[in-house]
Image (cartoon, rainbow, N blue to C red; front, top):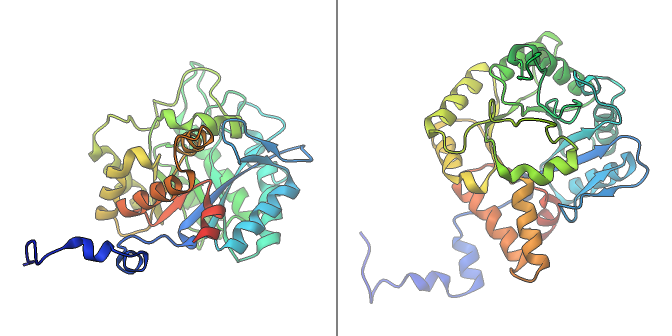
Length: 327
């Protein structure tokens, strides 16, 4: 039992910066952070993403530099997204050994070696001409099982190119199992899978679709991404299924609007829990700061601390390198 006021004074432990630092219950470390990076085929200079100030569609050269900067800052990992010059209904560039994502994986792996975990987003939306995450039926619906075959092929191509981890993000039923089987069959039994386990059909993804050039040409992704108003048990069921299929870590996306889901995942699973601080979260803070409405640096740190406090072991954030340097 604790004493009561005036003997008990909680403010004593808040009195100085040194005291607050010593008793802090939530700590960020650079290795907790994963930096998403976009690489676009056929460009010689990085292209700024208008809706995400400070984020770029990288050229191969600028991507290598960004990867090296992140590694030198102590960032834990990189996740690469490719933007090909040519797209088609199958997303053929996604598993092409000469496709932009595989080329970029080889570039980055050669640049940073084992100093940072290099991983790839394993999906189709950046590569299809319709912007959807899978193979479509004649009626325009995403064919779950046909898409699994593509994901399996893409994951193998990514690992052959140097990806040290794959991250399937399409929210297809059975995607983790299909990828695990394909990797194992190709001899990659040691490559882990970071599953996008609870990925919600969120309005917070808008700026990302500018960066990855993957906005759906029709319809939406509500048939496979989770309903924001859906029951929490549905997210926990997805976690159980992913783990049974061989996932090595699970992810919640977005982060800030789903802190309750992150907390439940941390309480329920015995693998690392990741959270993706998505483009809309990034853009809102940057826009408010640009207008002088908020303290940018404090808001960035507070948002990341809240995600960590909710239970995330790993945080995907576009501020990874900047924050790692600050830490």
